[in-house]
Amino acid sequence: LCEEGECGRTRTQAESTSNKPQRSLVVGRVAFKKGTLTAVNKIKQTSHQLHTGGPVYEGDRLITGNDDLAVISFSDRSRITLLSNSQLVVDDFKYSPEKPEKSSSFFNLLRGGLRAVTGLIAKVDRSRVRFTTVNATIGVRGTGFDILCDGSCEPAKGRKPMRVNVWDGSVSIQQSDKETVLNSGYSAIVAG
View 1: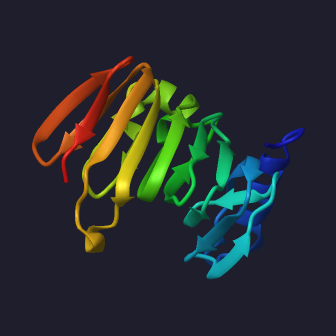
View 2: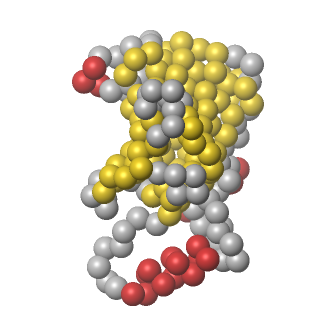
């Protein structure tokens, strides 16, 4: 993502230029895409099409259309594949190699599905990585997994079942006061 420390220089320059609130920093890049990938960012109040190599910012809502697919690589070496007709919000993503204990990555899947491989943030503190849907919150344990919503994951559309498949490590599925640990090789249907 960054060659020869350019991300560190960008962060330092941005922090020293002004006391005004800063725009989001680049937290990842589009590693691959088939079809269209749109980013809508409430913080920056922008909407644009992303291309391979394009930046992903904290606060971006990433949207794929019919028959589209996108792979996003994040600065902590995590990777998310966003399936067709999906919407994923990068709610919070902060990664600092100098202070890994203060790093975090929180995502909100609004529609569709994804495949995730966790990175360095999960290795330091797995509680600092979370994937939220209307049905449940998925916590990671050094892992590779899939989340697929049947229909929309949005609360306004009603709660439909969600499928979780773990193919490496394990995840914890949190619903209200109930937690279920799902290990590699297992799948679960999470009721709405």
